[in-house]
Amino acid sequence: MTWLDVVLIPLLIRICLVVLFPFSALDKILDWNGALKQAKSSFVPASMAPVMLLLAIVVELVTPVCIVIGWHDRLAALVLAGFCVVSALLYHNFWRYPDFWAKGDSKARSHFWDFLKNFGLVGGLLLVTFGTSLVPADQVTTHLLSSTPIYTRNAPLMPAITPTPARDASGSNTHSSGAQHENGGVQQ
Image 1 (cartoon, rainbow, N blue to C red):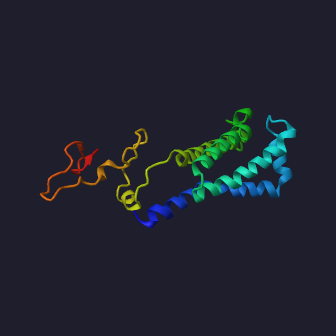
Image 2: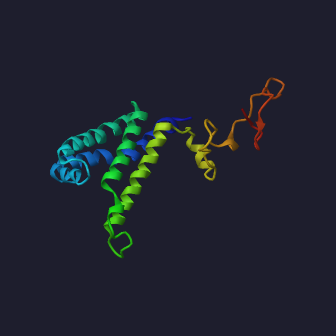
Image 3: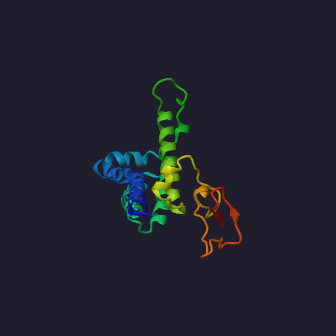
């Protein structure tokens, strides 16, 4: 694997995944009163709103940095995923608005899309938490139609491109067991 595969691509992916959170924290800091009003709009007691807001700012500032630099990134991604779930349930509760099917602008639909976006972020953050196999960029670009076996633990990402087995000096296969792949490789 190259520097591009090991450093640059994972870094860009992580930055793209968390880039909105520091800006959201900055917005809360710059518009404290507006953010406090929103925090009070949920079922949480008004006296807890400033504490929740400070906690949200800390989460939105600290966890993205941890994820990007790889310092306790799994825990940070899990905390941020939980934050997204709580935010969706508290502040994007689209089911409370009667205008979901109304023509034109709809507060319910607006919250519905934000609710789904939060859960899209949760999915990406859980990938950071539970990990995926790192595949070189050239293998991905040359096999764009291949799939990832998401339901098998430690399965190779693209079995069709598994390297061929090691051979001894006579050219014989040194592996005596394993299933043959279509390219002649052996899956262990």
